[in-house]
Image (cartoon, rainbow, N blue to C red; front, side, top):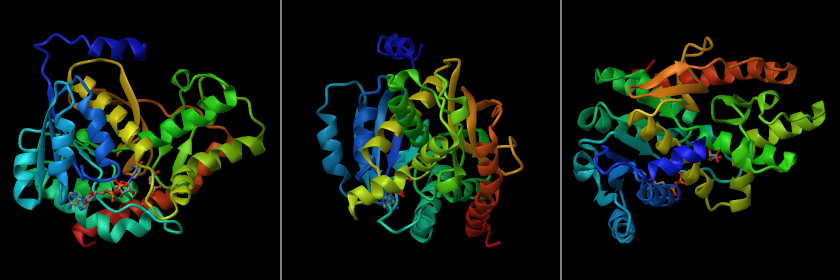
Length: 331
Ligand code: NAD
Ligand code: LMR
């Protein structure tokens, strides 16, 4: 089904509206490959690349690719207005990545300011845009964005997303390895947030079904929860996941653009303002429509291991959320 949809997208009628998409942090480790993948997306007509450094080179390079999206590069504060004006979707991978030994929360002091500044600009120049935040710690940067948008009077909770797609991509890859099947035929919902035990893969709901004893299920859950650290350690100081993240961000963006275009049945797991639990932000499967989140799908039954992890993560996620809110409100 997914394949058919993608194939159909390549034969879009020429008059179907094409989106304007900005990548903020476009010269970075994630920004460059995600810009490449977005340049290949037929749903995009206008691709804006913004960073505080190096975008002219990245933009010139990408602009030679013979696909339809027009690429424009913007650099520095003075060009942020032009980068954002008229955008339908803004993807934000701006900020510093982890080094071995760091947690995502250790990035808070630097990245909170970067996200706050960029969201202030989004609120001013493209207040109706959908926003996908990649910058860590996602558990806190999304609440920061929400508070900034509220202060600016343009907050639409249905259009603000923390990009947790990489957790799903990883879960599906690892499950497919165990099952010995093609990852494209696997689905695994991942709920909660995007750090440590707040990443909760619902392996009991994997399709096709996975049959693991308790120890193996726990080991797989741990691997998914620590997959970001696995990459950070393997890169040994040279940053965190960039290529797999770019793929995940491109999948996320494609889902948003299909929904914006009126496609039905677009479902993904993402970290959003939510009343699925008693936490104000939570990642869970949602159905997207033209106006953003259209429906929260049920989390479904959790097994004992998942339920225990769910109860345990709530406190951590609440702390992360409060930290983001307090950063903006001074609370
Ligand atoms: P990077 O250092 O390679 O790139 C970051 C880019 O942001 C740089 O080009 C930098 O110039 C730019 N930047 C800094 N301040 C900016 C500003 N004010 N405006 C615009 N651009 C600015 O880092 P990376 O590897 O691309 O990672 C970026 C972020 O994404 C990190 O915070 C990382 O932790 C996070 N990340 C999230 C996920 C996820 O699943 N959500 C996955 C991987 C990485
Ligand atoms: C990831 O999950 O790969 C990202 O959040 C980056 C990181 O710091 O692990």
